Length: 233
Image (cartoon, rainbow, N blue to C red; front, side, top):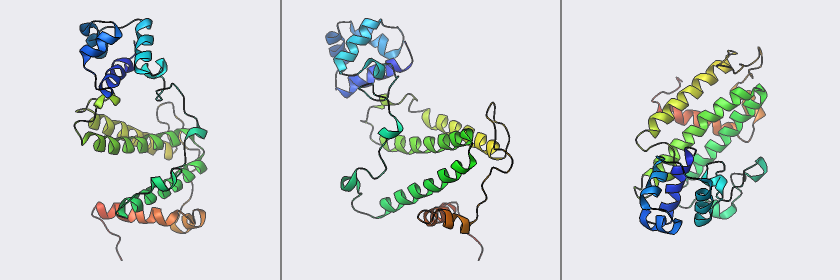
């Protein structure tokens, strides 16, 4: 059985608020055997996978970690909603600061991915995306883990290890991206071709991204202020 099955089997039980004893009874196995399945000590047969999927009302693909959707659906580009597709119910209430920061980040990412598109290098785009993905993962997990009652079963990385593992993955993605951006190979990944790196100035960014460049400039200023550095007058 794959590595996802024990974790998801445990998560589904905890989401239902079921004891291991109760779930074992309803699944027709002993508590000891279910415990072994949830810990990954023993592998179950296909019949148990189907039974567990029916019991928790999820697809076998989800239970085996082949799909992030409980129905087994796979996501396509067309399935991903636009950031503000939720409409009025997606608007943040109270302080304007969260909304401001959200817009600064979203607008700045538009510039970054616009420039990546100009580079026309799938490897560089992939490594920059991986770096950003891990940043979002770390922020989300920090918030999720703030409440100790939230079940950690949705994550594969253990609570005490995830931060170090995430930092390592982020550092690798950053190092790969740096090599690729300079035209060097990173493993089997080919770097940018000579002259492919886009030329940028504050003026050209403002011209190319009239709606988003100001947000990026603001983000740069905020980040460097946080870093304790300021531009000399």
